[in-house]
Length: 124
Image (cartoon, rainbow, N blue to C red; front, top):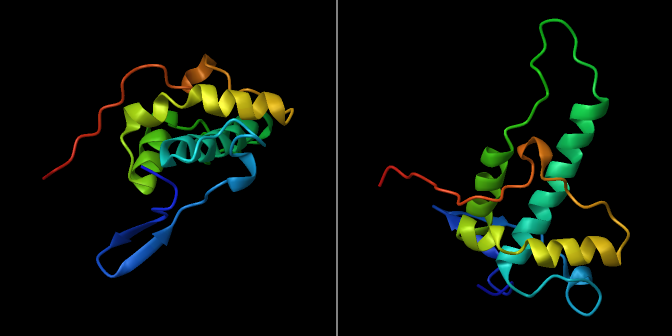
């Protein structure tokens, strides 16, 4: 799916998803496919969540900030209207972009980087 298909319509509402043209080849490693942009968006959200986990303060009675990365991944795939497995295969694009722009690579540890097949169950 190409990034020119940028909007997903729900009933009479349109959701615009973030795209990252500044990181498309040759300026970065992202392709023009939505899966690549969706995974990069997941990367940004996961890095932010990881930072909160590592540096956040949890007060008594507050919910633990540990994130459900699998659910976050699935939500981003749905938002971008892409197959989660296809999005998961775009890690080389995201890693190349990170290296080119001196950004940290998302670690596999802690379930942040999903390396297995993603299954989304729908009630259709």
